[in-house]
Amino acid sequence: MKNYKLLTPGPLTTTETVRKEMMFDHCTWDDDYKAITLKIRRQLLELAHVTDEDYTVVLMQGSGTFGVESVLTSVMGEQEKLLIVANGAYGERMEDIAEHAQISYVTYREVYNKIPSAVKIAEILEKDPDITHVSMVHSETTSGILNDIEAVGKVVKEKGRTFIVDAMSSFGGVDIPVQDWGIDFLVSSANKCIQGVPGFSFIIARKQKLIESEGKARSLSLDLYDQWKTMNKDGKWRFTSPTHVVLAFSKALDEILEEGGIAARSKRYSDNNRLLIQRMKEMGMETYIEDEHQGPIITTFLYPKNHAFAFQEMYEYIKERGYAIYPGKVTEADTFRIGNIGEIYEEDIEKVCSIMKDFLEGR
Image 1 (cartoon, rainbow, N blue to C red):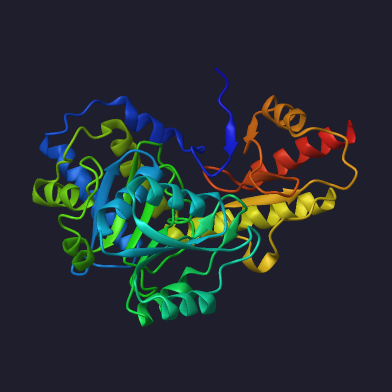
Image 2: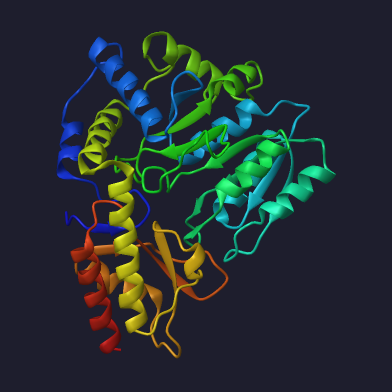
């Protein structure tokens, strides 16, 4: 089977050494395996610039959405109310979670190519004292926009609310000083900027806020407090853990540190992003997001004017030559997306842009 390089936010291209870690079997009750879980949790705290005095890490089986649902359904009490800040499909997914779990919520909705306003959020919180929690996405892969969670976090703290951030596709690729930015719960996934493989999400939680959530969970499997309580006791997961994914993630964490930490990885991703945008503009394709708010994770491009091809034609042409870009679009505008993260380097960006140039010239 052909091994494609994936230019998507995940599941993405990772290293051969990370993949090899999954070739070993482990028992979930082994002391060695428990030690790996504890190592992962400690390293994630370090990447978040927090200590175990104020914060803790909970690993949760499942995809990133499982992690977001775990937080929302575990920390929202029946008498509490959530403000969902949404400017893309993943912010809107929080609405689906709230609907299914019967969580009281309101939504501040912004258009997909604009960042939500911290001033507007402050006004909403001022007018509605029933709101106790605020949730939003940092890197919205619907468009590639990077929302200003620092400004929003400041407002949320000033108003005395709890701040929940979906940093699924940004944590590890964008530096996030969690405590300094007023974040109480940050959710990310094994298969994004850390460059592991899919199978679990992780939550970096303010310890006191997590303790206060005891007994609020609407789900057995996704009970964040109970998962933490068990994991904190002896390093075990409550239920069967994705052992091979955990081993791969532990290796991936070591590799991000070997690369130079978040600063070095962020630079590589940003360099990929700038080169991609430059090459695409040379082919007549502009970005959907303005430069000021374009994130380094994934880039959405508008089709060139008077184009005479279908996306699927372009997608298959590129894939046949060893690269897979993000399939389809989710914006109302006529767009397509290319990811900049994973084990991808400038030579890959040059190659995929060369392939696309050949495709366009052959139309």
